[in-house]
Amino acid sequence: MADERRRLHVVRDGAASSPHDRSRALDSLLTRAGRGDEQAFADLYDAAAGAVYGVALRVLRSPALAEEVAQDVLVEVWQHAARFDPATGSARAWIVTMAHRRAIDRVRSEQAHADRLRRHGHLFEASAPEPDDIVDVSYRAWRAERVRDGLSRLSDKQREALELAFTKGYTHTELARSLGVPLGTAKARVRDGLMKLRDLWEESP
Amino acid sequence: MSHLEHQAHTLLAAYVLDAVDRDERAAVDAHLAECADCRADAAALRETVADLAEADAEAPPRAMRDAVLGRVAQTPQLPPTVSQAPSSAPARRRPRRTAWLVAAAAVAVTGIGAAWGALGGDSASRTLERDVIAVASAPDAHTMELALGDSHLVMSDRMDEVAVMGHAAPMPAHGMEYQLWFVLQDGSYMAGPTFVPDDDGDVMTLADLHDETIMGFTVTEEPMGGSEAPTGDMVAEVSL
Ligand SMILES: [Zn+2]
Image (cartoon, rainbow over all chains, first blue to last red; front, side, top):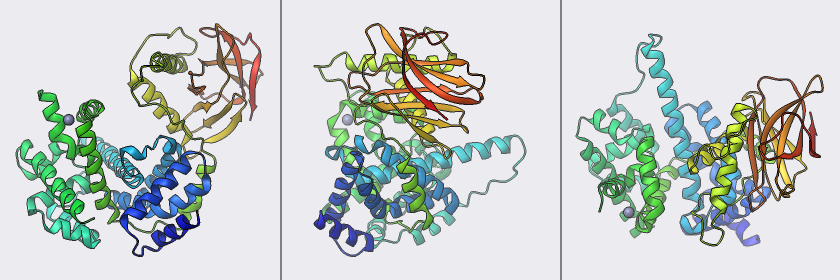
């Protein structure tokens, strides 16, 4: 217990502890939260809320929306904690991918709402930034050295496809349309890009 | 490799990035349930997506911590089961659970009705579960203890719905079910859904409040299919 707290403290400060230790500590917190341990959940909050809020903000752009989605996701983490199975992946991935999915769902529902408005003539222009712009903005946000380094090893096209999918919630069909490439090409760019990152990061975790 | 399998394999990366539409997601989910290799691939790719996402970590607003922990203190947790294929020993467990969940959902929508066996399949029980969660996580959700094992009743005026969820609920007498009743302002009862615990004692049901002003809830034991007005013993009561 004392050990775990020490590790978590390090996680909170963002200082160097091995990614593996951080990840294991989170697994154990989520497992305990799943048994109704609210203190464990509070510690989990301290370790994971930044990533949850960050990904929501990245996707949604609006701090208010991001906070709303992040709160809902964290409560959902609590509700579903007992269903987390460490054998199927890390708590970190479980939580962060849930946050990403909810943020994307939100973007899509806001988008559908905007489309409906536009069809009925209440909204005249789409406020979506140009793709080039997106990539630039994205760059500023991809701060972590490792991620930046990984992304720099992708082809421009892979990176562009991956970022549009990750931050804008484009499906590969929308991606193909937006990039003006065949569906299979869009799919392949996303896949090759993500797999390359996986291979890079598995080599040097 | 079938066309669908091939499709699932090429979609895996898009799937973990949520860059798929609903049908594609369903196709990949179905494939993952059967293919251990793809499950392992998906898990590894999820870690990669988590790496990407974590690079964006950002300090959330300070007030968010209290808000989340406050909601958590009011929010019941879902039991650990569900979503696994039934093992061979308790073979009837999954279908039965599904049947009563579906019935509970259908009854909640239609008032009293014989909805047994009307629908089938996992997606309906997942839909109910999702709806129950939606009620439980509504900003105005109000949680009350329900003396039926370790159960809670969660009400959201904004969603105009009430959900019952819990575990360790005792079984009703043979041939009987539990039924939820709304106590109205004039003291009369409006019929809610019937439900029975599954083999693990888990209970879950959901009902529309129909914009009524509700003074309280009771749970009684009623014959299979439920009653128009309470006839059986009251097993639990919540007043607002
Ligand atoms: Zn496969």
